[in-house]
Amino acid sequence: MGIVEMIKERETQKILQQGKTEVIRNLITRMGLSDVQAADVAAVPVTFVKKVRASLKKKK
Image 1 (cartoon, one colour):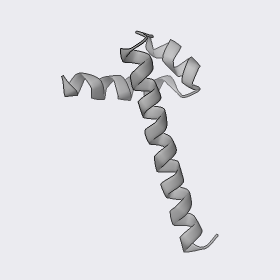
Image 2: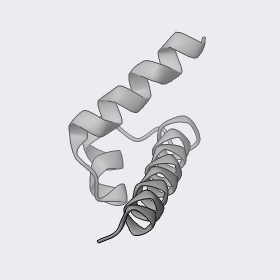
Image 3: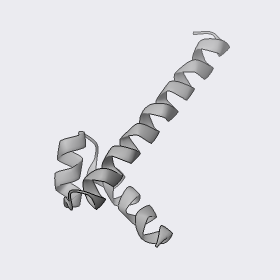
């Protein structure tokens, strides 16, 4: 894998991460799901959901 491909892959992963974060935010704020429920729906680790929830609390 060349440098250009590696940079593209990193950017793709960053965009996917941002999308997952937005989905988790919506599951928490709009649907009121628990960490476990949101993680199950979004197919991400519970630790990721907890980080998103913590960032939401900091913004308030």
